[in-house]
Every structure is written in C-alpha cells, then in structure tokens.
Image (tube, rainbow, N blue to C red; front, side):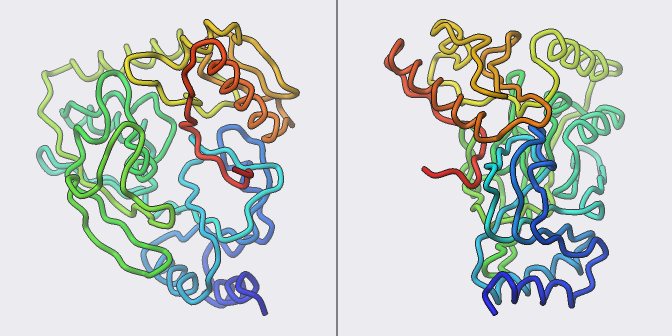
Length: 305
C-alpha cells in the first residue's frame, strides 16, 4: 500500500463528518473554477477532526496542499498528487473583546471586516473586498487600500501538517513582507488575533461602502483570482501589462481583463493550463517591452516550473 492509499485508509477510519474525497475536484474550490483533482481531500470541521488528519498525515509521507478559500490559487488541469486540506465551518468563529479580535482560520475576510465595523472597530475595513480566508491572508500577507495583515495582526496559531507541531506565533516571528510570509507550505493557520482601534461612529460603514464601490467600478467580476502578478517596486503590474499592449489579450479560454490588466478571467468550462500559458506570455512580453520580470502572486499548483 503506497502512502496515499495508506493515508486515505487512515482518514476514512477516522470517521470525518465530511468524509474523504478521492480524486476530488479541488479546481472547483478556487475562484477560477477551473483545474484538476487532488488525490485525497479532507475538510476537518473542528479541532478533534484536525488532530486526526494531522495524525494520519504525519504517518504518511505525501505532498500537502492547504486550499483555504481558493481565491489566490490556480490548480493545473493535471491536478495535484497528494493530500489537499480545507478547514471546515468549525474554524469560522469570531470573538471580539475590546480592541482584540480572535478569528478561526477559515473565517471569510469580508465577513470579518463587516463584523469588526459592526463592533465599533477600525483598521480591517480594507479586507471587505478580498474574497479569501483569514488563514490565507496571513500566509500571503494580504492587503489593499493602504493596509495589510502586518498592520493589524497580533499573533497566529499554526500547525505543521508534516510534524504535528503547533505553536502560537507573534506577528514579529512571521516574516510578513509584500504578499509573502514565513508560514510554510504545509503549515495551517488555525486561528488569529487582530489588534484594531476604536472607530468614530459611522465612519467604518462609510469606508466599507467606499471600498466595495471602488472595487465594483475598477475590478472585474466573474472567474478570476484577483491580482495575478505582484507589483514591482515603485510601479504597477497592471500598468506594465497595459502599456505592453496586452489588455484584452486572449489565450484559449483565458483573457486579460479589459477592466484591469492585472486580472485574468477564464471562460466557464475553461482550462487552468490556458491561464498558465497566458501568464507566461505576459511575463515574456513585459520583459521584452519594459525590461522588468513580473512574478506571480497567484499560487500555482501542479504546474512544471
């Protein structure tokens, strides 16, 4: 019995509420809604189930993918050979105590942003337009509208799915940078604590409305994963792509958005490999025109490097 078979057998024996997915279509869990399957998929609904998953994973040497809400993820059409894990509903809790906010790793960023405003706090409004989880936001140091996770995070609780080691990590230990962190690829953020500030009455609601309005006016909807490339120092990836004449450029089922050139949209029933190919064309063209090499912000899974 190979590692994946042994893992699937152990996870099935654990009696997880959502069961164990085999050849599970994880591409459908991403905001692109394209891409292939994972050999094994689980969604632990609480801490006890997560402990069982970690125990099985540490006993079997397999590749591990943390899915989050899939808003910054592209899975190749060929899929992922290994264990994919997504935290379930029991990890979506929110507790507010004064200026401190504790949230489970699966908590939706827009939901959390609105909750903090409703509780009279400010500093997290920017997240209302980011369709990800708080755990994923820590991993990528997500941000927007002049702020990011580094500005509000106090600490994060993580668990290493390869070793089972869990720890509470203060923000200073997480090496948060521009769309990057020291959270490992097999580490799962199970909860976070944010430190916010008291808000002037009504100001937070106005800020939320302004951010939502700006995003609707300036960013496309549909099947996309937000910004595809990180911004080079002192410049904008969208501007570089636009000036290279690529706005609206298409490769198969994938097209650079007419509304924002750093977004790629994909047709219904499209191909993740088309998105990957289009990204490659963008990198080559921008390097040719501007002499600047763009780097993907999107996490690429199952593609040859």
